[in-house]
Amino acid sequence: MGNLNGRNGDRASRLELIGRVQLAYEQLRDTMQRYREDSPRARMAIAAAKRRLSMLNRALAVLALEVAAQQPEAA
Image (tube, rainbow, N blue to C red):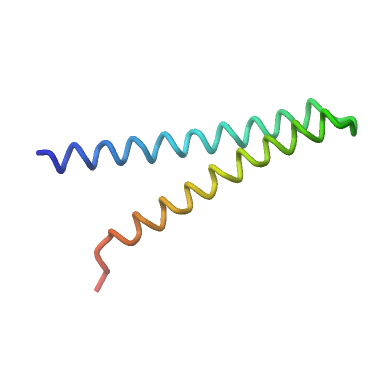
């Protein structure tokens, strides 16, 4: 029973991370649309949104590798 709860928790965590990646992408898109002018403030806001998305994408990639490594090999 404990193993099942652990799996559900892992799945919930993965889904939460996927949602956070999607939100970060949407925030980057919105930031780029909002700051059409080339100003220091615009560059800083876009760079911050890109860093956030990049970090979350890396976390998602690592998680995907971990999950793939746990899967039994198909014969």
